[in-house]
Length: 153
Image (cartoon, rainbow, N blue to C red; front, side, top):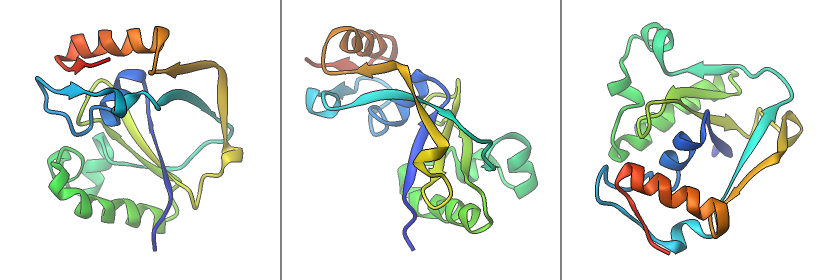
């Protein structure tokens, strides 16, 4: 069974690293307009507490594994890591949380569409970053400079 998901992040840096830069090399990558111009970063607030499987800290200890076994893996391991998420969904969790491999200053999240509905989330009307132009593009270019990724216009 395929479970629909929504990916999230605890901060803007993690959000960009886990999405726009997900398949980019650590240094020297190029981000083309076709990869960002139709993207929008928004912030959601939770309307209820969610039960998340923890794939970090004590959660990894409880599972008897390390980040290198589950969350700090290459894309070739994706099918194996999806099975952990499927097990979390089957166990009744609303989603999973882990320390971002791409930007370890925050958390990455996956929320299961079978457990979290649009009614559980409220979009923050005061926060939206459109990367196509203006302040959003300026922010993305600065972010690229800080990370060694060339953002082409």
